[in-house]
Image (cartoon, rainbow, N blue to C red; front, side, top):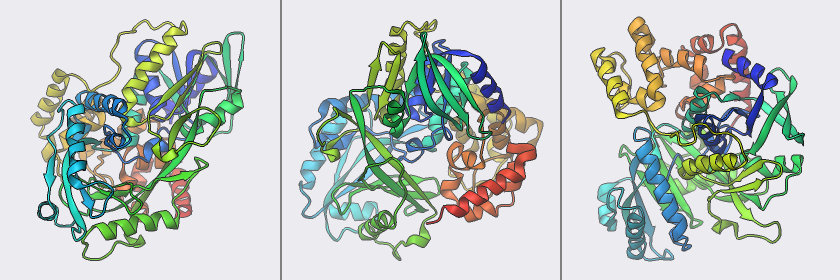
Length: 538
């Protein structure tokens, strides 16, 4: 909270080279790229960082295999290159995982033909991942007995990648990197309008916590409001080449369906891809693909039943999954970039490729569409455009992304081993504590080692089954701008996605976590969370 108040004071007083509106993946990489290159950057979000689409994805960073069917080979090539780049840059976070896909009898294409598509995909992906393999119905049943193969003609395995933690954490780490390089960021600050005068943008901002209204000055304005880009452009009078269409996707989180660490991929009853994705001790199942008019969406009974019906049809479960088995839900819209204002697009065929509309005269950018796989390209492109505006970038060639180098990583694991870190905490996780801390925090994980050395009790778990230590909560309080309890439980961590809200609320360590995060406001913030949880029923 102290960090947020300090940044709010700077937002009121200073003039910035660039103000970024929206802290989703596009805004986060823009801030990280520009700040690293020496640009004076500010970023605000009307909610929490990664609070919308960027915290409701499938947690996959894939090369776009489905676009092979529509013949978009150039897009697949670009996305595969971007996927490989992400995997090289974030080897601890963006990891290869096998996809097992079944083809039902009567599907529009024979299994062998679809399998040839995976070979082409592997070729376009520069053989960066493990080779695909064809599977008969019997091989599928032997490999993954839980799959219902009664109507399966065949299938295959291929590789793509996924985020080992969660999408919101990945996004926030870009914002944290940006702040470490001088970016002034604040969550729960809403832009209510922007106007340009005498070479500056003046953005009226409202603090969502105190209701204070103030002005932020910047030379350049970047609209990365995700699905709300069009809405804010209407407020500022920006005319753009692109606009958004929306596809709603939902996922349900249930207890782990299979112990095998692979994604089960099917074609759902409506013919679209349907996934069962490992999420720690749980499984994330979905997604729907429903056209909606507004980005303000929620999970309907029909959405939920669609997912449950497909799970129960595609798997041989001891008993069918029901609504009562759902631990948590994810719901978001995919903003699909459409060029032109007139006519109706075939929205099902629209891809997730991004578009950046530039108004040179106003020094304004609007970012449409995009997906996590392509995020590093978005950051680079925005930095180049801002430099073309005449904004000074003294560290223009600085690399702004990626994990710390091998020397830093080796030193972390040397210190962790010397203090027997992995033996200090007993958790149900299948991975070691040192690996988990490095993946989440990178170089900042050294601070955790220091805290544990000073006080071994810092390695204690605060919330049962949550896999978060006391020292992690303490570090979040200092560095991660936790404004509401949900920020920590839902986005900086995935606690709320793998533990039911009822269990969280009654957890013994929750009050202590609130005390660490909020100090004198602990009780108030806890009651705020309990009240908001009561309103979110399913």
